[in-house]
Image 1 (tube, rainbow, N blue to C red):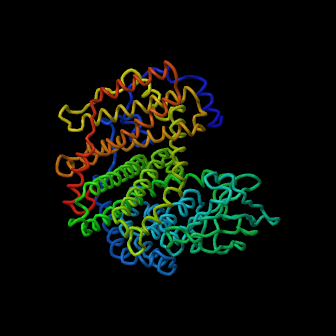
Image 2: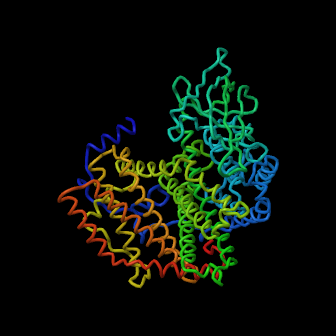
Image 3: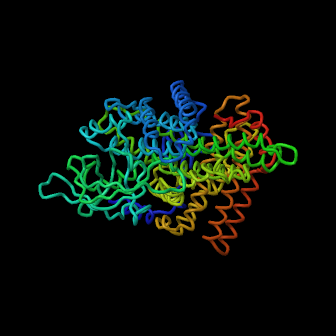
Length: 616
């Protein structure tokens, strides 16, 4: 039975209201994708940078020093297409071992955890150059992982050592002019030649990152209607590389079109089996999404620091502009957005690593388990991408505003940052597509009972704010209750949506988008509170409390607005009136009265004392 048929059957069999509530075993949810949805703020565990091991810190320091000392001084030269210099930096990153973190040791890699992989791209971002980060990230993620996960031993031995060292550069060619987000609708074909020795590929692939510089490319074509993956290398005749695209931003990275004209790909370069192209194409994108979340959240911190340096020097009306309240509010919001992204990113990697730490790396099905574990965290990966990219977009936009007219001048760094930022909300799946993934995966997990969403919904129907195992002296007790109200509100909206649409909910974008926004807001609040709760008492926890307070205030409003939009759209008459009364009743019971200005003033006071983003 297909997944769609299972969904149809499950939807017809029962409604959520017919289920009884059972106690949820939170310990069994650690390491499961979507666990945050059903795990209250007083339960569960999240990984964060405060829990980095000594090895994590060593990689962080090494990569950060390289970014600051080697990449940052070359920023201007790397912001234009400079193949020789880019390849030089790329190979140096390989020599440091940073390109082979996900590669097995027998093929020249380090085989380290997902947290370390993200720490490296996070720290390398200290070089403040988006182009080189795009180049390296595309190589280590979407270009190499298909071979790591699906390649046979001969393919791994041929390609991975040179890709891990930086001797070869990889690329990933999926998109076609008529097949962007709907990648499987591509028209590139592959036909086996009469001798049975080669596939002949015909078609065009666009927007190929690293395409003009690469030695190896993973690409996709239909074999008798079956979507299939292939490895291209320089020995493949008929692989024609087009001119470099003239882009709005990330101008120092290579982006080209591939023309496949009876391109002769040896049968031994078939990646996986015929017809497995879909899973190969999409499974690696989960990793690309959360790694993009890491680089964009890191970028937000550095943009903030640059804007702060400028605000410390720029004078208007006989005082530096950092003293104006409106500027201070911008900085407080920028700190909060960056911290939210950072919290989400390491929550994800920690959860994935928790599961993979118990798996034998020498097992034949190890990479199958890796893929399934990462796919299980599909909601979190999309959240990471959305939160990080939108945090950077906000920060860069406000950075330009703080610079004023100078922000619009190419001589200053904000103009380049503004152009570079814009692509992040488009590639690795547009943020709209990622919201569809969040909503659709939420529906799937609910109906297939992959996590106890239906039990959680049933348990919250009569009590939206359960008794929490928190001290009455907890300074953020009302915030905790507000988060639990939002969790129940999201359950309420999900329940009403499934009752109306069933599995067709995944196609109702007017509802899926605000529902996804509720999930994103909940994940930010839930993760942030758990990160805060796990901290030892002290100055750092006090600083985190200030930021968390503002984060909850902001995300609470997002959740309220989205939820009310859904309820007003779905319901009518007495049912709408009853629902709105229920929402108002439980909202009042939180006792939550956010004081956003007080939070913002506290954050900016700390920021000005520390003189840079201070929550690393």
